[in-house]
Amino acid sequence: MWAYGTVGVILAVYLSEIGLSNNQLGTLLTLTLIGDSAISLAVTRWADAVGRRLMLVSSCLLMVLAGVVYGEVLHPSFLVLLLAATVGVLSPSGNEVGPFMAMEQAVLAELVGSERRTHVFAWYNLVGYGMTAVGALTAGHALTWAREAYGISDLEGYRVVFLQYGISGAVLLLLFLLLSEEVERPERRRRRAAQHIAPSAASRTSPSAVAVVAAGQTGGCDEEAALREPLLSTQQHHTDGAESEPTVHPEPAQPAGEADSGGGAVAAGASAAVTAGGQGETREAAAKARGGAGAAGGSGGGDGGGPKGLSARSRSIVLRLSVLFATDSFAGGLVTGTLLAYFFQTKYGVSMAYLGNLLFGANLLAAVSSLASGFVAAKIGLINTMVFTHLPSNVLMLLVPLMPNLRLATIMVFLRFSISQMDVAPRASYVAGVVRPDERTAAMGVVNIAKSIGAAFGPLLTGWLADRGLFQWAFYLCGGLKIAYDLTLLWSFSHIKPEH
Image (cartoon, rainbow, N blue to C red; front, top):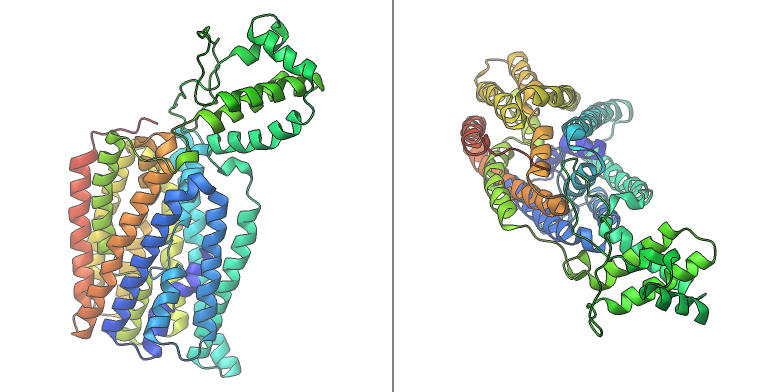
């Protein structure tokens, strides 16, 4: 988020500096967000199946690529800029884009209980907005200082900022590699555990151990009673947001010759478990090995066969929410952080340091307000918090271009950001609560992709308006559409409560 903040303050100004027209600028930002959406769709769709850490690391490599292209290519063409921004998950808003947020939110929702989820998301957003603010402040003042102290041009300074964006992606890659297995889905962790335990135990299997298995299956070995229990029972989805381990019940007798589709894996897991027990390992470890093998061999609906989809009920809710969030994001895309900075520079002729201070103050206020949102949501509910903190902020958005001077316009921006982001943490918590735990990555992915697609077309319209001297209409449309979104959200979802 620090890296996003540094780029957000300069991206539109940089594109204008290298000769892009307002129309081209808006088009590039729009196509960038569409490309980010496509990448997010691919990453979040397969994240649970191939591993969340792997997908996060891959996304960091794309950040490095974008930083190198924007920082090192001296005379980039429009096509080169577009490709690098699209695959490099550059943020036209200065805030979160790309696949990171969907996976991070899904992980957080599984690691904490429902009663703490909104507060955790609030802290998550506090850190994010806080570091975005610091990034904007750092970039704005560093560029001003470098120009005055060393005489470097603005364009050279912008390229240095993009290079540090690439370096930040490399640092982020190392941090993601340090994440533990707890960030993966439970069934994936069980399968990986089985793959590690079963082969090593099977290598020590002796004929006597196999005989013990046979005796246990016929009731002649009480010591290994766990081997007669079913591989997986129906998983219980609790309201604390986390999945419990499968409950084990006694297995009914099966007719002779009857076997399930995972029989081979069961036998291998059972044999390995008994041998491990003979070597002094615990019965729990043996049962875990058996359960993991069963999950790998007999789970037809698991992530081994591809990413999980959404149930009919969840699909209906998520699609309706996605339409509303896409509308809200389209409105927000009309005045992204980088376009807000561009508006202040073109209208008031302010310095880069002033723009850094503007976005620093705005994001810092957003950070503080996002923390308060958890306490407000506990009092009045998630939907009410999303709506009644968002409505007045949108009225303030309408007032920004109407202010007669720079000082009052800045005050309007600060007042707006002091409440405008209080809906973010409740929104993430609400989405996580209305779908099952095993659907969260997909749901978060769909919602965030819808938001990215909606936001993608905002800059295109703003560029068209700015080219015709109508930049202020981007603010009017932004505030008006967001007010309509708030009222529709309240009417459509106030009666649907989170269940998970």
